[in-house]
Length: 217
Length: 211
Image (tube, rainbow over all chains, first blue to last red; front, side):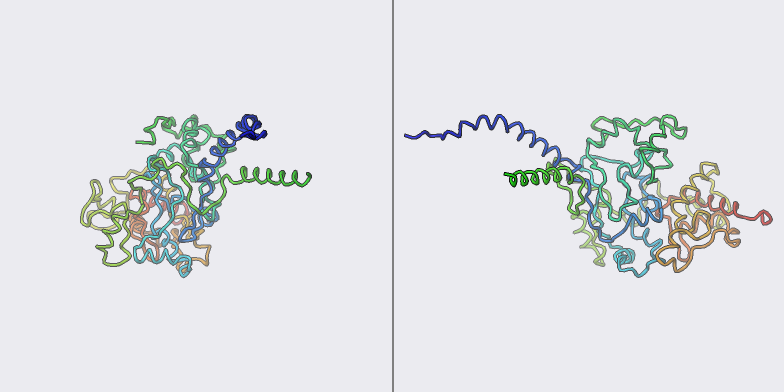
């Protein structure tokens, strides 16, 4: 009677002992890399119903973010503007552009433009723009160089670990409060030269919460 | 043998590039939430659509454009939220007891350097794109895309300079000519601050002999 297991099976324990750790490390590495929001979320750039270019409006023309996202200092959300805001200028310029048809229709009929949301936190995280602006965290810190984006994309993972990195050490991401919408602010040079603790315009210290209910309620 | 090594090297190269190059790759597809963790719950963010209200709206709508189903509901017609009656004629309409436009700040607002600084900042956000930083009416928006069919007013015109302070508040609030109203975009206090800054620009650009 021949042996049940052929001779080569004697190598299996050795192969498992040698390759097993690599396979395990590979699996851990795979999950760490491919399951991370840096991989799954950063770079998300949906096609919008109106091809609005932030590069043109905020970049080349230098319009302030708050011209359109005017609620950002007063409300938790930086609202997507109504068509009326677009029509402030576009009733006078590019009035027959086919790309703006949806905006004109929306202005006339009141129908919503189906913009696609780019930055979306999980529903259990309650983010409020106001304290971040009041503390001097700039738009570009979280949203990236919007003024260089023809199509807006996610520049940062907006994950909990990423939030906490800054909540634990906010100092490198702070700037004078009158510079929050300055897209060209460079944390590597301007940020190094700025010390929030010595800014006389600041009324109080920046003290971001690190406890759970700071963001989850 | 050499060929196998080549193939192995290419495979390894592909794996490395695949692993290192994909992070932050651009995609039009929504992010994949591998572990859902209650990321999407039965609650609504501002400006989100709500299917329940969509059905309600469409049933009541007199025209098809009104079936939007906004999760954030508009106030019931004829109601006023607490603190939003806006019955201060001076502050919210810029008019005195005689119904004429004020040529001073309303009683609720005090002139201060902070108010002027606020006015400058707000002017540079909301007015500068058309009226430019000096009020000259040659803002960046008027210089692109073929220009405006009707040019914005030069705020330093003697005619406009002669207008009462409340006029500027009124124009920002209600619009004038081809300029659209900005009441929804700028709170009343900020509109007054901008009016003050417009006046400041005008005074700064008035020739000495005309003062």
